[in-house]
Image 1 (cartoon, rainbow, N blue to C red):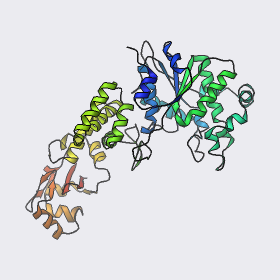
Image 2: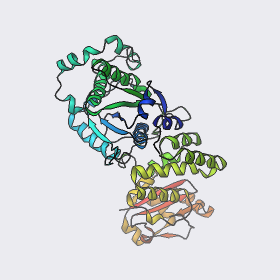
Image 3: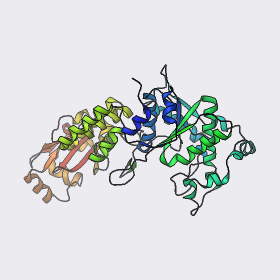
Image 4: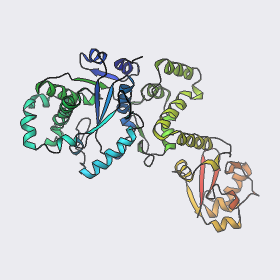
Length: 425
């Protein structure tokens, strides 16, 4: 059964606006549609995922997605939603970034399908040989300054200042649409609601430079239930690159969604059918304490981005960190230990000292400084609030090299939430 793309966007809560006639155009048969990604970093982040999923849903509905990596427009900078002009990158950095972005997009889009494979293009390929005079003569003459000044992305920046570089961005992006329309029969451009002005400049340019069908569709900008920007954590952007945001932290980001945010996200960031999503939300409402909605969402998107093995590692790490059982500590890789306990107080200890053995009370104080004094350490041990590798310990406990997990780590704990990591060197 062929899925209705606009219906998909509507029930998923993604649709913001579209130009007249798009629905009828899509019903005629497979259409080509694109979204642009400026390669200003070597990784996408969660904030990009709405548009990545828009292309994913577009392909699922039988259409042909085109991911435009803006090697040329990335050198200019889009003023939409920006308060100030951003730093511009050189060609070498942009080329590197676009290759990294392609690898990430391949986790979501099928580039090898027989019927409607995804395609990737770089607008640098058609801009690199176009000189400035040719551009303003062949393209610039078709769009008036009055038309460009009326765009919200321009008006919102007039007081703070807008360079000619940024002012021209909508014309450059509009030409992208014209080129794709002419050479790849691309008839749909998609983007966030803040891109409406840039996209419609493209449809207008196509109309004035020879005609042709061209449509626009925008998605709603995603915010959290509290009104803050979606895709941010306390440490900043949540990246798709495991070197920037570990799979464990990525998993935790989705797991920590509020009920309202999870109900919104499960529609947007999965490919599950409408009935399944409705059933999952209904089950969650009956037993919200089980957090099934968050767990299913986090599992799906972490597997999609990082793979099943990393998901298993993230779940194991979560179980260990927030549970009471010691089983499973040895299953964590060294990198997972460092990821899970990043930000937790840590100390290095000579392996030779551990091989000789040390009283736990000395480990808690003199060797690590986890507790400020031996008096406090004695009280904590008498209270039964100290654990070594998740196992309760008393005053008689000795610690030696046999306690090292993976030959490297000892996990100290006071109460349920106070952790300290000892690393043997």
